[in-house]
Structures are given as structure tokens and as C-alpha cells.
Image (cartoon, rainbow, N blue to C red; front, side, top):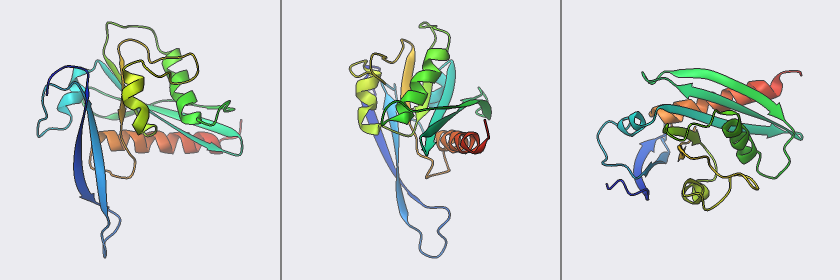
Length: 176
């Protein structure tokens, strides 16, 4: 694929690992932004980034919590940070992701990736800086958003989203 900044999708059919008797077909989507090629190793595209993070936000009873993990160069999932906040919009996922990006040091010369599990239909516009993440805040230079789901477990990006979800849920349960 050309390195042109366009979005390319690869679909793969999987069986849900928890369904033994009557497996349900799942469809995993992998999204590539300007990837030079697709290889058998799905992690090859991740190596073009200096840093890879993932964020997931859960909400309950007027409180939201975001969990963030980092993916090490050796593809190990590392806990990074989690926090609670009162959501101000109907999209706490976007609020949590924007807050994480605001807290990161600006380094537009570094290529960084944030994996999310929401707003799949808007990711291309957000990545092209045509749509803000939240009102008045666009994706900073040097960052790309990628989509992954916690519904499949065979790819490292699915594992990082699952870890984020677990951290966000634990943060919601924590008292103050």
C-alpha cells in the first residue's frame, strides 16, 4: 500500500474463543493508515511508531474513568495511568482520549499511536485533522489513532484494549 495517509482496511473472520459448542463468527477489522504494505506479521505496522498507547473509557452513574496502557517495543502490555472524571459531553471516550493527549509532551517529530475502541467511523476524519476529538481540540501532530476491539483476543492491539478496559473498570470501582 502506498504511504499516502489514506485509510486501508483488512477484514478477518475469527471464531469467538469463549464459544465452544456453537462458535459465533466475529469479524475483526484492522485499520492501516498509509501503510507501505501488509505483511503476515500484523505487528510490523506498529514498529513504525516510537510509542504505542491505548486508552479506554468506561462510565457509570455520571462518573467516567479512563485506563491507559503502553505497548513496549517488545510488545509487552504495561500499565500506564488511569483516572476518574465527570464527563461533560455524551462522548466520555473522546474526553478521556483528549485528556490523555493533552497530558503528553508535544513532540511532533516523534510518531506515536493511540489505540481506541470507539468512533471507528470518525477515525479517518480525526486522523486527517478534519474533525476535532472534542470541541476545539484536534489530534496533535505526530499522533495517529487506530481502532481495536476487546471482543477478539488474538492480536496484541485487542489485548491492549482489554487491559485498558480492565484498568478503567477498576478505577471506577475505587473509592476516591
